[in-house]
Image (cartoon, rainbow, N blue to C red; front, side, top):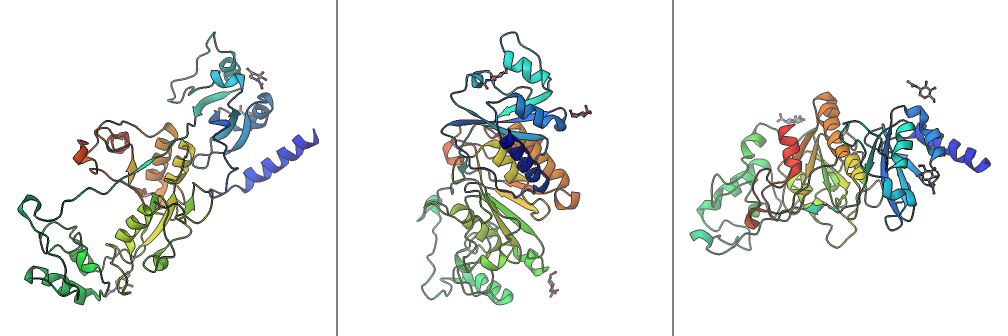
Length: 367
Ligand SMILES: *[C@@H]1O[C@H](CO)[C@@H](O)[C@H](O)[C@H]1NC(C)=O
Ligand SMILES: *[C@@H]1O[C@H](CO)[C@@H](O)[C@H](O)[C@H]1NC(C)=O
Ligand SMILES: *[C@@H]1O[C@H](CO)[C@@H](O)[C@H](O)[C@H]1NC(C)=O
């Protein structure tokens, strides 16, 4: 009994102190299933916790306050009767064969969302063939960095104009493309207007961000960062293949004029790392990630999604959709955060450029 009171007290303190970044209890996907409960009346949460001894209270959902995360032992008899109840807001209806559902409805439950664990797939680089693919040839840059032929002169001009001494700049064909003029992102005229990313923060929702890299350290935004895979404030890449988010961050905000590597298209902007791709997560984590530090991050860059094999189909879970709506309404001082999803990487495997087989694009496109 005393224990229960103590637990309540701790719970109360935790809920009242809760900020979005609070770490959550460690998850145990081997032995437990997780789900979220929405109550018609939030004040009845404690009664609800008491009434269902096999539902373990975990924490309030981080993206959307109205939901609470519970776990249930995989062995529990009640698990078979749990499911996505009213997850699309069509109303809850009692069913003769499901006493648990009856009881949940009587307890003022508005909806239940199961939280299956999943792993999200990174967008792989599009394979390119070198040599004389399609009749084109790609001149190799000389060792001394001097232009190989006159077509590369422009790189030198740009380097002078903007004070770029970053050694791999000449290879960044997406910024200056002398071989195939027109096949670049056309950012030079923007730089010439002194628009270089000042005051903008892009969050890389990815597999971490090497915030200690000499090219990213000064542009790293700690307040906008969180590691959902390891439940940690800093998005350190920890796995062998955790380089994807760092690469994407470099393309955006690698520092200019530090004699190191290349430059980002918005080299005066800041980047945050939100790590979700380096392990299993639930839709609750995914939703929280999509609106993490919404008052700090302006753009959420998502280079991942359902597998790009032209066959897989997936869409954001309800709570993820709700988080995206919150982001586009409340982000950037109510101007709306910007969500960018990669697309087209699966073209060589028959996936289409826009939204076929990718419910994330469909959702953002048609909403
Ligand atoms: C919500 O529940 C609390 C506690 O049971 C109760 O006092 C309150 O009247 C309820 N509010 C509404 C709007 O039903
Ligand atoms: C299963 O749910 C019912 C409510 O339908 C509850 O009375 C019972 O205690 C639960 N079982 C366990 C083992 O907690
Ligand atoms: C370029 O923009 C930055 C940030 O707004 C400003 O501090 C700087 O003075 C500008 N430079 C020029 C040459 O206008």
